[in-house]
Image: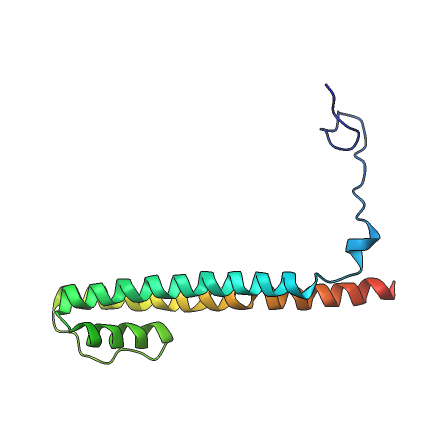
Length: 136
């Protein structure tokens, strides 16, 4: 079949070869430029997620409550930041939209925070792993 040893499927009764990482990757952190690239990518995804959610909120408040663009932006931004609503909603459709949008904003707030800090936490955990491996 042309399968290289250690890369194909293991046949019944055979033991799999253990994967061994090279020492080069086992004891070092990723270079800082790789870390900053990962951080910038996470920040860009978080910014895109927040911008899209803000746009959905503005359009929804404009459509359901007939708010001005500035008031719709203000209401959406405060809900998205976790501060809470500003304007009392009058229509039934607006109340349903406001409720669903508020719940959605809570999830987006957590998701965007996770996207921003995932590379930082990942690097910290790798640093602890490297220190732990050095003690062995």
